[in-house]
Amino acid sequence: MDETDRAIIEVLRKDARASMTAIAEAVHISRAGAHARLGRLREAGVITGFTIRTDPVRSGLHSSAYVTLSVEQPAWQEVRERLMRIPEIEHIALVGGEFDVLLLVRARDNRDLRRVVLEEVQAIPSVRTSRTLLIFEDFPNTNDR
Image (cartoon, rainbow, N blue to C red; front, side):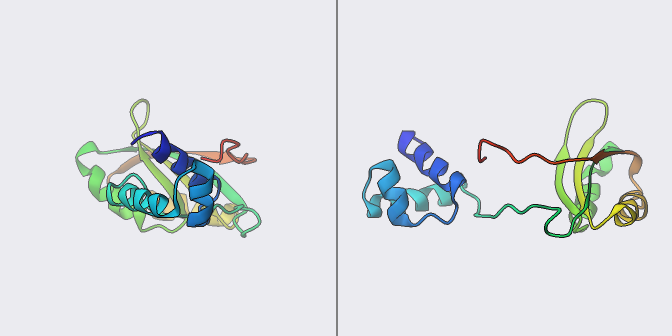
């Protein structure tokens, strides 16, 4: 990756829907050059997809929490597969430190959040303990990343 590739990524971070012409103009290369570079970035796995961001509250998810888990280490992959099937889990991270896994859970309300944590996550046999940290307010990332 060079500076032009990094500039293309920055343009797309700000607007994933940017046209090829807009990308080319922003980084001062030809449209064909932008198209070729974007193709190489995707092929190399640098760019893995394009997405949108939503406001969880405005989209009906009024209760959010970070949930920490302690899990039986040998069963991590099985735990991960089960967690990935729970639609309310927005993000899963294997971490080091006091706990093993950090989840971001978004639910319709506190009753739904309780169901996800106690009936779905805690039902996974290799999950030893969990701790739920309610999110009172989210702040969007001001760096557009």
